[in-house]
Amino acid sequence: MTSEPKAPSAPTAPLPPVGLLPKLIFGSRWLQLPLYVGLIVAQAVYVLLFLKELWHLVLHSFDASEQQIMLVVLGLIDVVMISNLLIMVIVGGYETFVSRLNLSGHPDEPEWLGHVNASVLKIKLAMAIIGISSISLLRTFIEAGNLGTTRSNFTETGVMWQVLIHLTFIISAIGIAWVDRLSESGHREKAAHD
Image (cartoon, rainbow, N blue to C red; front, side, top):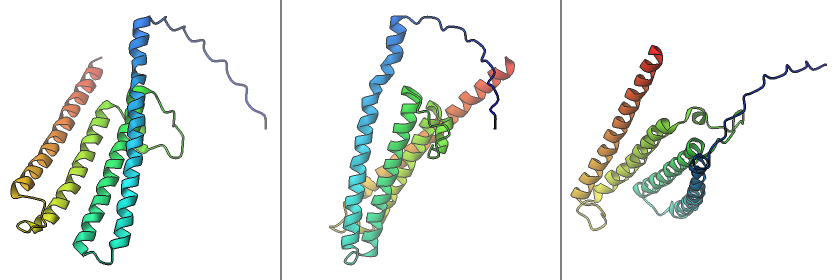
């Protein structure tokens, strides 16, 4: 088999020189790198927490009630959802605000990474926070059956506040999505007029 000769590429215009201040400002994005490395360390802590809780579940599953097992499993799900949130922030934030990861074509490239931007990242984070809050609220409702007993860690007022905070997360996410949609339609209208 013979390979086709490659056509010569068109010469590219030289880039205009960039001043020192713009270089410094643009380079300052690398100051976020230690923040993302710190989040990777936090991710490792969550993995250890998950393994510890899983070990306790396995060891105590025979002397625990179904409700206790369900609460531990919900705790494990909560850890996984927080871990997913960390991954979205680490990968999406680094890709959006620091530097490209150049994963195009990699078999493990996350599907959502190809179209992530600050706006998409905000909505994904809001949805992840709602999911985490939902799991926490479900745990509270299950444990709230113990209200009035000495084993309960919840008061009616505490449960009410947790519901209100959860609703605030939902309303905030709807607001973020609505503003994003308005902004997106404004960009489309502007592009149509140009």
